[in-house]
Length: 110
Figure 1: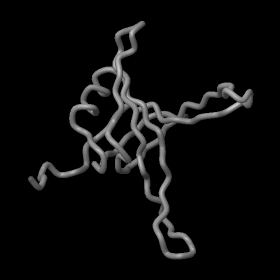
Figure 2 (figure 1 turned 30 degrees about the vertical axis):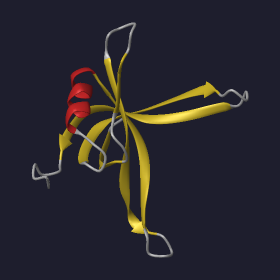
Figure 3 (figure 1 turned 45 degrees about the horizontal axis):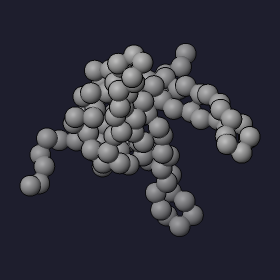
């Protein structure tokens, strides 16, 4: 089974684009997810996890989410590799979102 559930904050506004060949909407963001422990100095630690949304979910995320907003995401981990410009093999891992839930309240300071 390949299932991931994360709660975290967006590190920047989502990046959205339309794939020309298919017309599908793609939205990418980085989620900062706190770890349960602190470092030797007592500072919080976090992991920065790339998340990918597709189609209607991508449209909703790009419309309502901005940097700093709290969200819950569930999905699957996808890994891939590619050859960098210097000829070395690089690996990447990202979460392909299947579901999400907004966690921040609707109250905002104007």
